[in-house]
Image: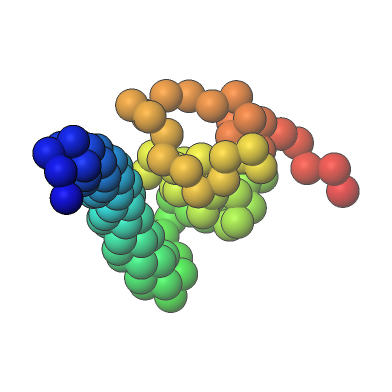
Length: 119
């Protein structure tokens, strides 16, 4: 093997290693994003589970405030949706279950909560 072939072989190996390193970096970044998203979803799931347990407990013992809201025309299901909305999650068809950024208002969610029922 002459010097030229040796140099070309080392150059090709260097380029291959650089490409492999770039691919590894991209994979690492993707994995980090997946882990972050998974952690966020696990936290949201835990919060929702706690909320469901809280709802089950509240359903077993009705509160006077709920009775007043139901008398005012708000059904129990709408009160549950209102609670989910107040906890920072969308309840509208467009973004159901997604976290509301900075607890901003969503016109679609508010429409779901406060529209008059069409019986």
